[in-house]
Image (cartoon, rainbow, N blue to C red):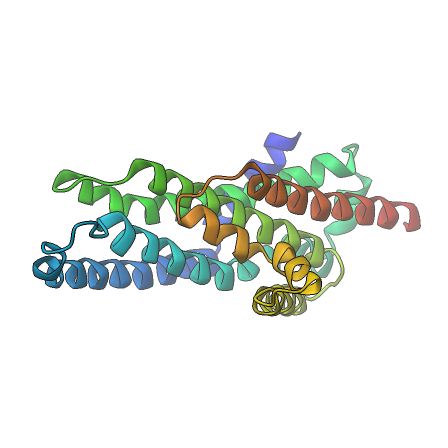
Length: 250
């Protein structure tokens, strides 16, 4: 049943003008950033040639591209997750979903995997841009894979949070605003994490971007991966519990 629900969400997304608009905006903006970064890298070739440990194309093109992709996709993900359950409730099809002989965990996982597959498609298109540079230069495969893994985990975490928040309201727009609010709080936690005291270190650990930046630099740490997996599990677990509560009420 999970695969059936995920496939349904996938089809709904591809039939949605909003999803296509989000995908087009993301890829168009990131393609322009990529071309600009490549042009800047070419302009710096003369200066880099005289340095002993000059940064390569991975540091000056791929890493900034993935960093920009993170911000773009963070802003666009709530627009995709806002309708996962809110739209069902507004269209009065949510009751049919609750009455179906399917477990709450299967429903949540199915919807999550459906929207996540669409987001991973967006990330794959972003990854294809720097891979074209491999035809004429050497890429640092370790940094490339670590950054790509971090980007996937970051977006997967925000998608899980957006799915849960879409369960709390009947209005998709309100669900999107709530997800944006959560992103703002996490961004503020990242800023506060710059402090060296215990509270600053704690807030820094709670900020998803802090863990992503480490992976973006090619520093693979299992603690960063575990953080994202716990983040995803937490919000998906909250969504399952919320769905079970709604079933009991009905």
